[in-house]
Structure formats: C-alpha cells, structure tokens
Amino acid sequence: MKIIYAIVGLVALAACGGSGGGNTSVSTLTAPSVAASTSPTTASAPAARPSSSPSAPAPTTFAGMLNDVRLANGAAPVTFDARLGNAAQNHANDMLAQNYFSHTGLNGSSPGDRITAAGYRWRTYGENIAQGYQSEAAVLQGWVNSPGHQRNNVNPNFEDFGLARAGSGSSTRWVLVLAAEQ
Image (tube, rainbow, N blue to C red; front, side, top):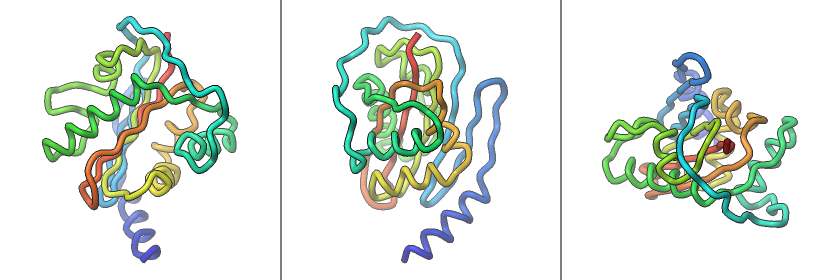
C-alpha cells in the first residue's frame, strides 16, 4: 500500500506546476494533493501576539515534526499561533463544506485576506494546502517531498504557524499557514 501511495505521490508531484510573480508562487497537486503559496509583503490588521507554549514541542506533535524539518534545513523553529490556526481552520472548513480545493476562497479571499481577518498583522506569509492525507505526519511528509511546499516549510522568514484539518478519508482538507508579524 505504501508503494501505491508513493507512486501516486510521485505522479502528482510530477504534475505540479507553479505560477506567480514577485514573492508569490502557487502549486497544486491531486490525490493525495498538496498546494503551496508563499507571501506578498504588505499588510494591514491590528493584532496582539497570543501566548505560546513555553517549552519545545515533542517531535511527535506537528509542531515538533515541522520544527525538526526546519532545524535540519537551517531555519529557526516556528511557534503555534491561535490566530493563524483560526485562519487555517476557517479555510479548511470552507473548502470541505463547499467542495473545492484552492488557495483562493470561493468568496475571492486570499491567504493574506484570511490571515488579516483573523487579527494577525503579517509582514510575510505562506500557505500549504493538501487533500486526502490521513495524519499530520503523512501530510507533512507530502509537503516535505514537494519542492514548493518545502520552501514554505523551511522559509527562515516565518516565525509562527497554524495547522487545520477538516473532513475525513479522501476528502480531508489540510491547511498550513506560516507567517511573521510586522
């Protein structure tokens, strides 16, 4: 079964294409699928930084696994931010409820719009989305194996993250938002 997922993943990755200009790029894959978008650098929204975990997360948590990937690639750890988690969860829920898979919401919202609406005053952000993965470890590995997503995972400019999952089975939607505040 792992061989089948590996072959599907390789085929999906081979089909991945990027687009965008400046500091923005988007790539999309299917079944299981992942998509990444990195950040523009303008912002507007007031925000207070929420408290975060005082100790380093265990490697078996998503934060621990993500930070292991970052540290192995020379990037500092990121900290969970509830506002980014809310932005990610709202987008994952919307994609599931409305049956679509895109960085652009059906209302025309961009990741930056959703992050701002959550009260996070960003200076840079990135968004990875995925569909069909059944665990945090599996979705992170899918993102690590995709160059565009991995660039987001290890971008040294990011300081915070939020992760969300909506649904189950092949319709599971994942959203990872990485960002840094102004």
